[in-house]
Amino acid sequence: MDNKQLRLIIESLIFASDTPLSIRQISAIIKDADKSDIEKAIQTLEDDLDDRAFFLNKVVNGYQFATKPEFSKWISEMQDSKARSRLSRAALETLAIIAFKQPISRIEVSAIRGVNSDGVIKGLLERKLITISGRDKEHGRALLFNTTNEFLQYFNLNDISDLPRPKEIEELLAAGEGSNLLNTLPDEVMVTDEEPEEEFTAEPSEIQNESVKEDEKNIGSGIRDGNDGKGEKPAKSPEGNESEKQPAAKNDASE
Image 1 (cartoon, rainbow, N blue to C red):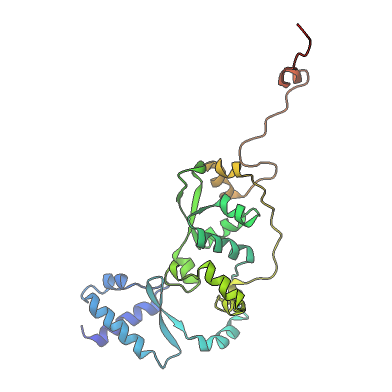
Image 2 (cartoon, rainbow, N blue to C red; image 1 turned 90 degrees about the horizontal axis):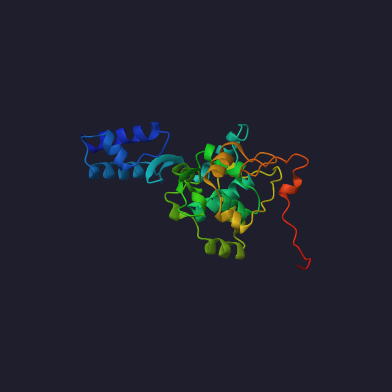
């Protein structure tokens, strides 16, 4: 197989794929081509696209075609009339906490945000931007969350290490570069109208004693009214038996 044919095959694979294709995946498909030949063909393909409106973008350790930034204005106008799936501020805030603190539990996310984050986390799980990566060895073996490859692809990142460090963000904001930083986000991530969130008021002891059953139930169905997820409330005792529930009164009479 000559280099031109190999390049055309790779081009067709990347074009037809819904997700970025890694060299390993391409090698598994084109079994009679060496890894070095595939890398050379990809380099040739990148060079051939210099005068085209799209380029070969490396993201999530793979390759996909993407339009060049200078054409974003016209592409945005084309998409303005389409319904777009947006991330709310609450979702972005929660996603940022998980990205920088992963692995992290639901109760820790809520404690950092100061509001209940069950519904937001459920939505991020449904969008596959985060995933359950395991359980905490302590603190009630709570479920832990990490970001996914879909998160990297959504924000056009090759690796999680490409995220700016908190110190770098602070320096950008101090230098007045906050608007430029926001402009690097995809158009669909910002939204203005949101429902108010429930304030989170858990005590530190609640964080440490978080139960596994509570975590799983709250993620699946949300917190129910009048039930804190730790079990049913005890029934009231029948009349006449209240004295059995009262602690014994201290006897101050002298013997």
